[in-house]
Image (cartoon, rainbow, N blue to C red; front, side, top):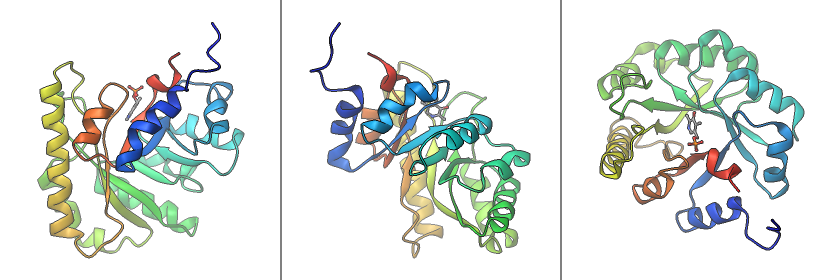
Length: 223
Ligand SMILES: *Cc1c(COP(=O)(O)O)cnc(C)c1O
């Protein structure tokens, strides 16, 4: 089928995101460089991977003006591989991990931007902080010494369900957490402004609920 005259999926998603200036993180996990390059050629510059090894190899193979985000669970012993180039780590879920990111960032003479991942879904398996745990982190003496990381917002994943009411409530919960932490811990910090929420199936809902950054994978590669 000749689809030359149809707008690409990328451009139709970007049209949805434009009114709210929401950032698109193109999730390229499981896709090859050859599959991803057409998005780059259409102008996309922010890409996300959930695995360290794939992030590193795609960084090495692809043009150097790409911003690479890590969106999946990160093990401390793998931070060193991404510290030289990663633009944003969405999935910080412990003080220990933040300490390790700080250590590796320092070695690279960089400051690495991070999001605190919150547990808002009903599934037990999803990673992330509860409010009190994140408060404990932010109040700790250890946190106050970390000068090579910068917390720029929050991230969350909704429950994998068709129940839109539930998904909306979970996005609202993440937005409330953002507002709480902004007021209580980051009120004089201009960098704390990101709410990373929304994927292929629920990004329109996420935008309505205040997402500043959507992480979209499968939809981008549909045709
Ligand atoms: C895979 C993944 C996404 C994108 O999911 P799609 O449903 O393919 O859009 C977003 N966030 C995280 C953390 C992921 O692992």
